[in-house]
Length: 177
View (cartoon, rainbow, N blue to C red):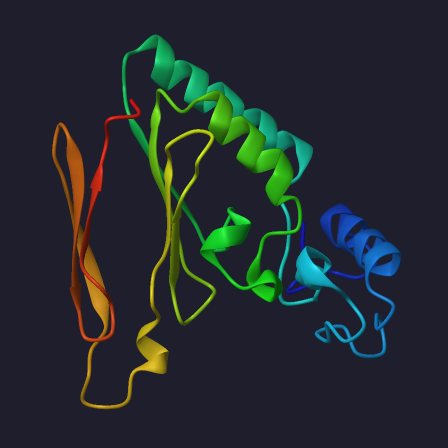
């Protein structure tokens, strides 16, 4: 669900985004990217964000159930951060609570959630589930000649993030699985 690159007349996802923005951001539509007047996590309702609709939520839950049934492990990758403590409120996905509830339900399957969008990065280990939520630092925030990127090595008991440039390296234990 988003406003960006969607046809205003025919896109149901844009219509859903319009409804959410109208309900949750008094600055919309005049100043759609302004969180002015919004408090706390309500600042997420800006036009450069978006959400996950019902078919995508169902797909996520079905995919995680299939992984559980097959004794597989999963690393979620999304553009927008899912956990409110891993990012600024203005960068959080609109319906983070629905996605986070699904992830917590499958904490025996989900190793981590990796995202971008919040250019300065962020991290939290969810206290309820033990799942790691990492927002990676963006290359466009690094002055030349710094090149910012990361690689992740996946081991049986841990994830090792090897960062270059402004991206921090870290190791995440998987004892919650």
